[in-house]
Length: 145
Image 1 (tube, rainbow, N blue to C red):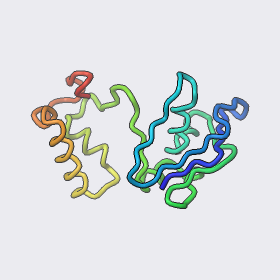
Image 2: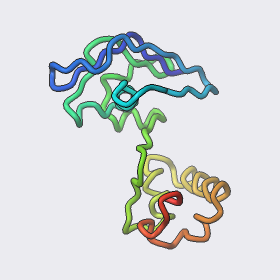
Image 3: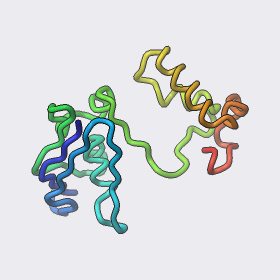
């Protein structure tokens, strides 16, 4: 389903950050990237998500394919449309929006019926969020965020 082939990433046209990264994720599998700080885990994810250019990075060798289609030259919004998104670590919520509004924003590229099912699923997994659906997200605890 997802394939990275001999990937190389360079920042600022001179700083080699990744060299020779290859991995394959088959449909239904879960894959973990493990490594020390600075090993390139986040850079690998940003390459997959198409977010390198925001930090003056680029894939200079190799390729990234999703279902046989090359995606490493696509803009991030086209990658999102294909179903790949990056969820950043930390408290990345819109603090002035409600919990429910944050969930709606997270699904902005999907049909409303799909968004509603996703929100219902999230509330099913995290019932406390359902209770706080109209509360501003900035007032949630760190774990709730």
